[in-house]
Image (cartoon, rainbow, N blue to C red; front, side):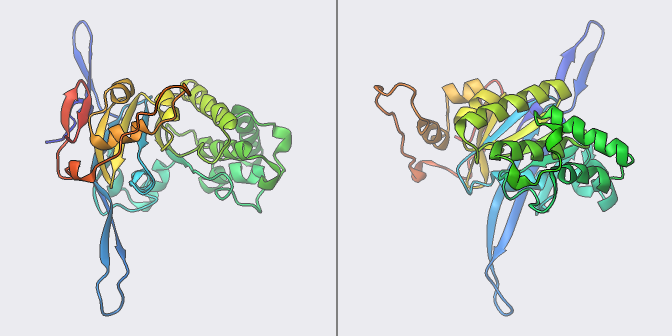
Length: 313
């Protein structure tokens, strides 16, 4: 039985019937292992980057995945899109088994599932002009003729707050925030319904972060997008996401509505993580909590603490 009965299906009552709706994305018991070292005559060491991770995301939701570096957040996001092949587990998108898709079917599915990468400096080809970068997905998927693609690229530039007059510029001629907007325009080119946002603002200045986050929120409402928002900046997650899952050493140790999780964290790791947030009042004494690894039971199952709030305690 799934650990998250709330996410298996949501219920909407009408006067005459009860309508059940499935989540847009359902991830069940996801595992990703790597082999480290080894050689011709010796076995390598198995490293488990993602360890039995399950969660579901409803349509139109901004779902946060947080944790320290190395916790498995990015690997989870890339496994969802099959940019990395999972070792075991199940991934369902709009009722379709993502892991069972053929290469042709996966290519079609990728029109609905896109990613915005963390580093706007390395995720854009420095030798391609902005127009070519944004147009590339349209060419790959053979959508529209040349004039239609050019019009679509200009439309996308305006959509993300960039000037279409700058389409012939190289990436080095844009600022970091502008480059991330180009990456976002590229991800939106195929009209996806689901975006994996892999730390999309962590490489940007604070003032630029706010602009990009506001843009993402506006686009979510305007285009009816669903987000998997991977981040380690808890301030952004608290502001941006409706629900949050906390990862520790490859496992989800707590998951729930953002307000409940931030005001009443239950897992020792979540408590330590949240205590590291900067305090707005400089006169307030820090309440830093040090994590004691001996208090963490890695084999503890998630159990319900409150409505939709689960923790491995």
